[in-house]
Length: 456
Figure 1 (cartoon, one colour):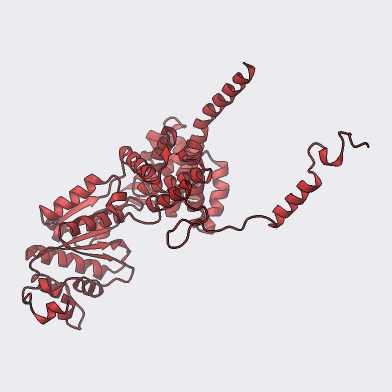
Figure 2 (cartoon, rainbow, N blue to C red; figure 1 turned 90 degrees about the vertical axis):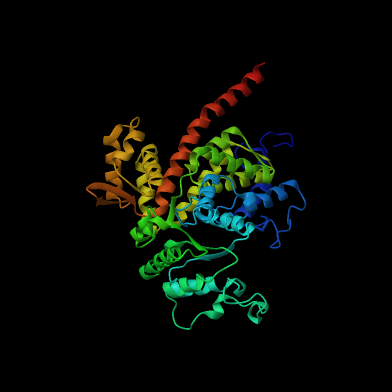
């Protein structure tokens, strides 16, 4: 063939040229592909992208949208003002001990951190303790005593050698295990300040004795008008799951079940984060996050993080619905990866053969009902999707598949997902499907508009 022929080897339709084929082979083998690198240094300095606006936005995003970490700075705290105000009033005005409980992902630890900051600003002496599975009363109280300066003990003068050396109440403790009576005797001598002891993640302790001792301490401190108040926070669906001997201390505590975050506060969380990061979430993306978060600040933060990152990776400061779609996919992948192999195998086959819409109803009800739900709880949501019979059929299938566990409590059939992450995963799958359905008309309208402009 001549040089002018259209059928040269490099020009055949659908076949790569020699250079293109080489690039494809090298790419498949990893040749010439940039090695993955961190985007910033460990000292929080801007790294690979230099001093660009997108690099700064990325760093700000990592500071604000932190789904795996609680909020510790009041500047990054959004919503929950009613919760925080209620707890502060209970401590300051009623001198009550406080118990905050609820499901995971509702921001209990963030509230505890911000409460700690607010109390310290008011010159309260705050001792924050994160409980563990093996926490004991002796260990926890020695930790508390080690944070209270001897200056505030009524038997020690302000100019005594112990005070000048910076000693604490821990120096006065006996070597034998501390009992609630011993602890309350010592704390009764606290003067010149008020002490707030925050016991976060209280549910992690498996010791019944530890919980009983804390309840006994609350009773003793209240009866003796001691200037020390306890604030307990943990995962529980009701108060008795978290604390023993409730009847004996009911009048001494303020119990608050952490509510799901209302849509207005979810919007505030997203908007505040966007402003701090230099990003703007458009109306569609904001609404998508609000509906998908389903009242969970954890999900809202997780989706805000992934959506913001997706926009920044695309060199955009405006976050759109497509970014939220990508965020939902990424979030669902995270929940899926945390499940056991048995559950993942069941989900792989089960979800493909069942309607995602009704699965979303079941998952959503489970999330809003502290994990345990009744069949009747599904009826309202399933009314337009085949009704109660279809919902009951899907639940029965999920029980047979081992995804739901059935129990009988107080004469009613109740159901709970076999693993905590299943409900969130199914809910995200349903939300992704709904968002894709909503985006199709808009995408079709955009294509039609583009075509009409070509014809003009």
